[in-house]
Amino acid sequence: MKYTSQSVALPYFIAAIGLFVGQIVFGLAMGLQYVVGDFLFPEIPFNVARMVHTNLLIVWLLFGFMGAAYYLIPEEAETELYSPKLALLMFWIFLVAGAATILGYLFVDYATLAEMTGNNILATMGREFLEQPLLTKIGIVIVALAFLFNISMTMLKGRKTVISIVMLLGLWGLAIFFLFSFYNPGNLVKDKFYWWWVVHLWVEGVWELIMAAMLAFVLIKVTGVDREVIEKWLYVIITLALVSGLIGTGHHYFWIGTPGYWQWWGSIFSALEPIPFFAMTVFAFNMVNRRRREHPNKAAVLWALGTGVMAFLGAGVWGFLHTLAPVNFYTHGSQITAAHGHMAFYGAYVMVVLTMISYAMPLMRGRAANSQRAQVAEMWSFWLMTISMVFIVLFLTAAGILQVWLQRVSDTPMPFMQVQDQIALFYWMRLWAGVVFAVGLVTYVASFFIKGESKPLITP
Image (cartoon, rainbow, N blue to C red; front, top):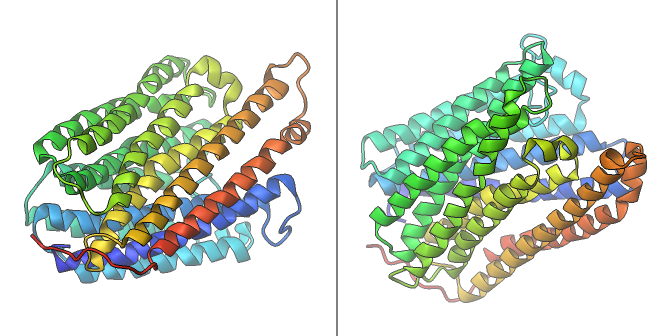
């Protein structure tokens, strides 16, 4: 760690991991509710567990992105953070607001929560992934603006690099597109049209810029490859991501009442979306193969390589499986969608945040890398989480194929709930794979507490 203000990232990373654990706990609860329908009912019904599971995912990834920016930007700008105190203040505001929102979901009836938090003044609640109360959404905007002000001012007073510019562009895009969560038109088609401007343009647009910048930063540090080489790759990746991702929003417009031309636009540009993820995979392996030094943090290198591979499989391959309009006609809203969502989020965003934490956390604790024993545990956690996620996705894919056949393609289609009984075996297998994932996550957390001899930090 070169600058003392980079230590601001530490609480953000700790909060991110803590919320990640919470997300997986609720994921396991939901997995059990799929096969034991009255589990935790009526205390935590399925719709509440799902809301908490997805909201925790979004919030902990945002904590991870912010922590990464607070670590990365000062080092790239070669100057201290503009205001560490503002960063810590926003951390506590965001954490308290996030915790209060989750508690609200769990202990207050959703309609009552909406009434308590001003939804009658500006109706923004009740939409998937954007269930947050109006007060929480306003709080997110305030935190985001303060955060962007802080890192933008840091960049303005220091060195400007391609990595920091791409990171900042992605973070500003994240904040700007979130503003559409406040727009809730009465027309359902218009509502879904602009709803995707948050959901899709986040995860298949500006988040990809953040991911690429974080991956490039870590690869520069662990490989010693010339910055110019990595920056050229970064330009190519973000161009492909933006061109395919922005117009690729059309694959969500197939069946919501929009004009028919979106089926062509959505299909063609969605077919291009795997390309930037494939480029990212080639980029990561190419940089590691060309490395000029053996970095002591082997675990961070493993996470970086895994990010490229799993992002390509989840966001690229599994996205392409059901993104063409003639195929999506049968598969949309099925378990195939859930399979794609799980591997895409894990491969692209969960893994890149864990890559950044794996690289930066030892440095913030005064060492070049964790001890050998700690890294072995962390690499075990990598394989446990990654392999179990592959199985989760394979089981969901099998469930989805059977679901589509029995419910939508067959000459004698079966009712929804009868189909769910037919594919329950896959849900059980998915649940056990989820338990293994949880073991991997516990192993990851435990690896930070394993003591042993570690290489001292040498400040250049």
